[in-house]
Image (tube, rainbow over the protein chains, first blue to last red):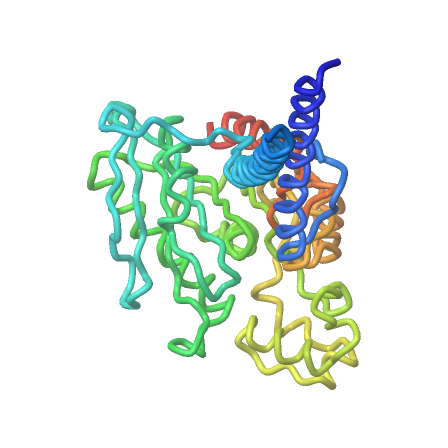
Length: 44
Length: 319
C-alpha cells in the first residue's frame, strides 16, 4: 500500500468518525433539552 | 529541500484531515437536525387548497384561527381536523403547524389551527382551564366560517402536540358531548393527560407539595394549597383540565404517542389516561417511543407508525 493510499484510507476513517460524532452531538444536545437516550432507536 | 517539501506535504494533509473532520461533523449534524422521517411537507398551491389566516373567534387578541380549505369544494359535507399548537401553555403559535395543517387539507379535510391566550406576564390569569374554554368557543366560529366559504362540516377530529395535545384531550373528552360538530376521534402526542402530583416526578412535584401547589394552581386556575397536595385532596380543582377524569364509555377513539424519557411532559402521567381508556373500553392506540424524550426524536420507526396510524384513524373515524 502506498503512502497516499494510507492517507486516503485515514481520510475516509476520519470522515466516518466525524459523521458519527456529529450525529451523536446533536442527539446529546437534544436529549439534554427534552430527554432521550444516547443510543438505541435511530441509528446512533 | 526534500525535507521541506515533505514537511509541507504533512502540513497539507494535516489540514485536509482537520478540514474533513470539521466538514463531516457539521454536515452530519445538519442532516440530523433537518431530516424529516415523516415527510409531511406538501407541495402547496391553489390546486391543493387555500389558507385564510388570523380569522377571529373571540374578543381576546389571541383568539384567532387559521383555516385551510381544500381546492375541491364540490362535496356535500367535509370533515374538520383541528390541530392545537405546542408551547408549554406559555408560547407557540398556530403558524408553527402550517405543514401538518396543509397535510390534512391535502387529504381533503378542512383544517384549522387555533391560537389561545398564553400564560405569562401579560396574561397571568390565563390557565389550561381558560385556554380550554377558548378552544371550545372557537369551534362554532370555525364551523360558521367554513360554512360561509362553502365547506359545511359534519364531523371532526381534534389533535395537538404537547400543550396542544393536552387541550385536544380535554376537548375530546370533556367538551365533545356539547360540540356543535360531532367529534369522531382525538390524536395527540406528548400532552399532559393527568394531574396527579406523584406522577410529575420530572418537576419534583412528588417530593415538594409547595412546588406542586404552585404549578397545579397556575395550570388549573384554582387555588391548591400544599396541604391539599399532601392530603391528595385537589381532584375537584384539577378536574376541568384532567383528561383522564373525563374518559367514559362514550369517549371518542384515541391515538396517542409519548416518549419514555420525556423531561417536559411527565411520562408517568400517561398511565392514568391509558387505564381510563382500558377500563371504559374506548378504542385506542398508544405508541411509546422507547428512546425518545419530549421531541419523540430518537425513534423514527415509531414516528412512521404514528403517522400511519393517524391516516388509519382519519380514514376510519371521521372518514
